Length: 208
Image (cartoon, rainbow, N blue to C red; front, side, top):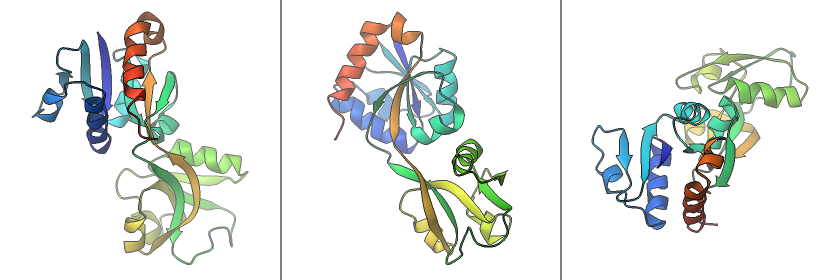
């Protein structure tokens, strides 16, 4: 048996569509109620629904073999696993954003950046040779520059409508991300044939 950790929410719905295209019975997943662990029909595959960061934890600790998770979570939470496929959905980007019309790089040198992704933010500014203070925000990060807590934010942007509605704009793109298929380092050897078959079936259905 192989066990798949699947990110709840937006990624979950797209992943179920992909699994169905690959010929897997997802009826349990589609009628899930409050359940968190599911079988894919008669196939010897179990699916666990989890929050994105927990998908990484389950894969790294080996309690799940395969994970379906956003690249944003991979970039923030480490990489002790094999990244096998770009599933080509859930596309968005990390962006540096702030108050519309403001020149982020102008004025004093000490900059404060608010973000749900401190590791991504730190790496980005380190690569630019800029020392910044990072404030971790769990909720609506757009509030930080509005309330003058920060000079800017680093966050995931899809359409940019939330930024615009709050008087903010993208200053520059940080990184483009999508949904990825990851595999536990031990599982890729111990369950090679089962995982290879799963990857082959999924790969054939990825929209280019």
